[in-house]
Image 1: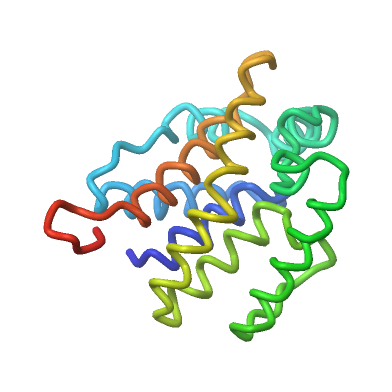
Image 2: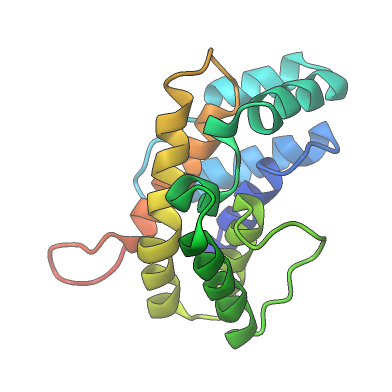
Length: 184
C-alpha cells in the first residue's frame, strides 16, 4: 500500500459516509499503511462500529460528532485560529498551496476541511513532493489535527476519534526522521 493511498483513504473515511463497503476497504488500506510505518493502527473500534451499524447510523453519528460539536469540527483553521484574520490568511495559504502544486479539489468544501487536506497530501505523495508534503504537514496539518483530538476529550465517546487519531499517526510518521536522517 502506498502513502498516497493511505492519505486518500483517511480523507474518504473522514468525509460524510456514503457506503459501508468503501469504509471497510479504506480501513484496511489505512491499517496496512500504518503497519508499514511500524505504527499500530487505532482503527479496530471504528471497524467494529462500521460492521455493526447501518449506513444511517454511521451518518447520524458523523453529523452528531462533527457537525454539532465545534470542538470536533473537521476544519483545521477553526481549531488553529478560531474566527479571526489569521484564519483567513491560513485559508488563502491552503488555496495557494493547492494551486501551486496543481491540486484541484473535488466538491465545494472549504480548503481547511480535513478530508480535503488529506486529499492534497495524497496528491503530493503520489507526485513525489516529499519535502513539500512534510513541511506542509508540520506547519499546516498536524497542529490542527492535534487540536481536534484535544477537542474530543470533552465529548462523550465517539467512534470517529480513532480515525482522527489515525490521521495524526500517519502524518507524524510521514514527517518523522530516523536517526540516520532519512525519512521513514
